[in-house]
Amino acid sequence: MNTKNVRRIVTGHNAEGRAIIQEDGAVPRVQKIGGEIGPMFHEVWNTRSTPAPIDPASGEPAEEGIVLAPPKNGTRIRVLDIPPESDKIRNMTPEEAKAHFAEIGAGDASSHSGEGSRHAFMHRTETIDYGIVLEGELVLIMDEGETTVRTGDIVVQRGTNHGWANRSDKNCRIVFILIDGKFDETLQS
Image 1 (cartoon, rainbow, N blue to C red):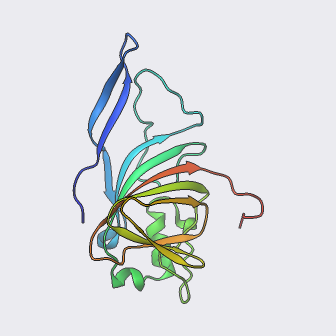
Image 2: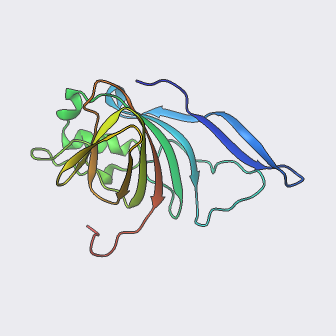
Image 3: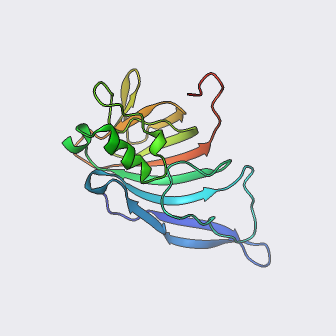
C-alpha cells in the first residue's frame, strides 16, 4: 500500500487582493475504509455549489468523516490508494458490500447481488466522475464488459453501475473528481 502523503496546495488572496499560497501540506483527512481490504481515502477538497464561490481566503467547507458522493450541487476531489484485491473481496456477501459502502454514506449505492454479480464493489452514484490513474492499474468492470486502466489513463464515469478491481500485485493510486449530477428520467432506477 502506498503510504506517501498527498500534498495539497491551496491558493487565496491576501488583504491587498494579491494571490498567495494559503496552505501547503498533507491533506488533512485520510482514512482507510473497509478494514484491511479497503482503500485509503485522501480527501483533497470539496465545493458546495455551482458556481463555486471564490472569496479571498476561506478554507475547504467543513465535513465530518468520509462521504462517497460530492455535496449536492458541488464537487469533490480525492485520491484513493487501492491495494491488490484479495479473496476477502471476491467472496464478499451483498450485506458485507453494503456495509462497506455504508461506511462512506452510500449503502444504497451498492449493487452487489451475490451469485452472478460481476464484482462485490459494483455500485452506482448520481455523479459524473473523472478518474485519473496516477500509478498502477485497475480493471473497470461494467454491467457488460471491462477494461484495464493504467498510469495516465482517464475514465469519464457517467452515473453507470461499475466496480473497480486491482488484479495486479501492486497498489493503484487514482484521483477522482466527482461532480454532482442528475439522472435523466430514463436512467432513474
